Image 1 (cartoon, protein in one colour):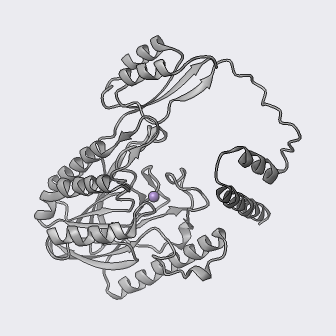
Image 2 (spheres, rainbow, N blue to C red):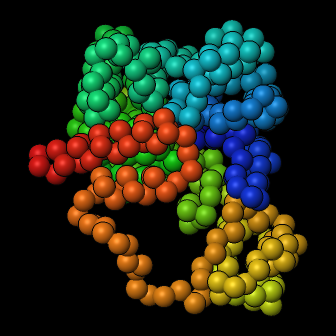
Image 3 (cartoon, protein in one colour):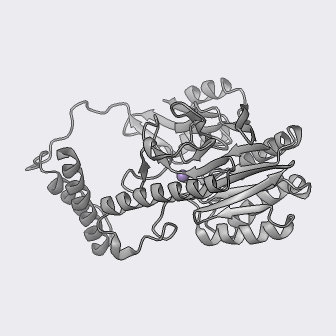
Length: 393
Ligand SMILES: [Mn+2]
C-alpha cells in the first residue's frame, strides 16, 4: 500500500503585522505538487499529521477548505483515501465538519479526519493496514476531566500519561487483529533538535521517545523540520511550506512509504517547492535597492526587513520604498539603532535577582486593563514556581 505523508499545512495562515502576507497561494502550489506525486506514484492514502487548518475568520476558512478540496479533487475522485489527525492549531468543530463535508464528496469511508484517538483499518490493492490516529493531546480529546487537572504542569503530565496509555491501547487492539500498524500523530517527542512552531513550552506536551511502542511506521507532525528520530521507522515529516524567516533554511519534503503485511517495504523522501525567504538589514534606500537586486525571485520572496538607522531617522519614507522594492515585504519592519549605547540602561532601585518584582514593574508600565495585568502576573508567579520546582528536581 502506497502512503504519502505530510504535516503542518496551516491552511489559511497569514503572516501578520503592519505588512500582512497571506500564504494560501504558496500552500496551494505545494498541495498541487503533492497531488502530482499522488498520481505519479499511484498513492492509495494521503496522510496528514496534524495542523491542517489555521484560518480563523470565516472568509479565510472558506478559502482554505476550497484550496484543499480543489487541489485534491482528482485524487479523491479516483478513490484515494485521505487521513488526518487534529493538531494544536486545529479546531475540533472545523475538523469534524471537514470530515463530514469532504467525506460526502468522496467514496464512502475514504475521508478520515480524527479529533479523538482511533484505530482505523484501511484496505487498498488487496492489502490491509491499521492506522493508529492520535491527535495533539488536549483535555477534551483525551477525556481528561478538568477537575483532575491542577496547575498547567500537572495537567501536561496527566495528558502525557493518557497519551501513552492510548497508544498502548491502540497497539494491543491492532495486535489482536494481526495487522501492520502505522502511527500518525502530532506531538513533541524528547530528543528533537528544534522547538515546535508557535507554542509556548508551557503549553506543549512532551512525550518520551521510550513510551512509543514499536509500530511498523511512526510519522509525526508539529516539529516543522523534517527529521528521523533515532533508529527504526520514526519520522518528523515536516512542514508543507516554510512559515516564516525562522524556517528559511528548512527544505520541506513529504515521505512516500510502501507498507505491506511485513511492514515498510520502501520509504523515500520527496522535495516540495518551498517559498524563498530573505532577512535584509539595511541602512538606507541605496542599501535596500542593492540588496533587492541580489534576490533571484524577488516577486516570490518573503522579506523580513531590519532598518539599521540612527534614532532621529524618520522611517516612513524608507518603509514606503521597501514596499516597492520588496513586493512580499512582511510583518513589522524592525528598527536597530545605529547609535545605540552598548551599556544596558540602569533602572533606579531595581534588583535583577527579584524576578517577580521586575516583571511586576514592567507590567505596571504597560497599558492594559487591570484584570489582564493581574491575570498575567498570576501566570508569572505560577511559571516562576514551576521553573524553580523543575530546577530543584
Ligand atoms: Mn503544531
